Image 1 (cartoon, rainbow, N blue to C red):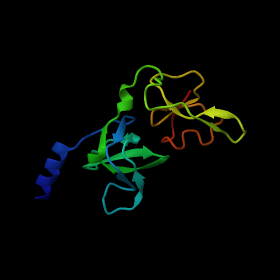
Image 2 (cartoon, rainbow, N blue to C red):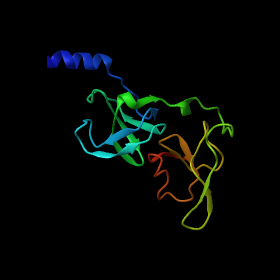
Image 3 (cartoon, rainbow, N blue to C red):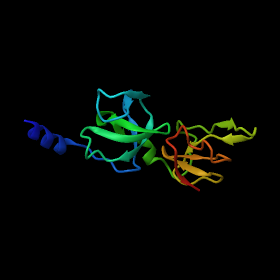
Image 4 (cartoon, helix red, strand yellow):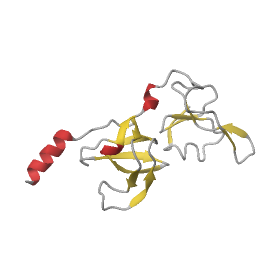
Length: 152
């Protein structure tokens, strides 16, 4: 019976590519390992975009993701294609994304990480959630966006 369950699980398993972005389709528990009984790190709210860290071959029904600078697992049933993958080539003010700013530790006004489909002028890093950071220092850059994907 265990072999049959394993085979059926492999047939219906979804495998995602490393670095791919997915959107959470409902509030979901973010866990330290790929089991329901394991400790919960936090709850990821519906609509959040997360980065896929590893495919799920050894974790049937679970995907390893990056969220808020941590690595953990979510159930595949709560992942869907990200609408951010289909954004236009430049920032579109008609989308839900708005340009926001913060004051850094040096008292400078800095643009908050924002979604663009191509590298915007002044960006210093691309975050794992697909946003571009305009940080003036490396410390803490993309810390609330899954970490730095690449420095520009």
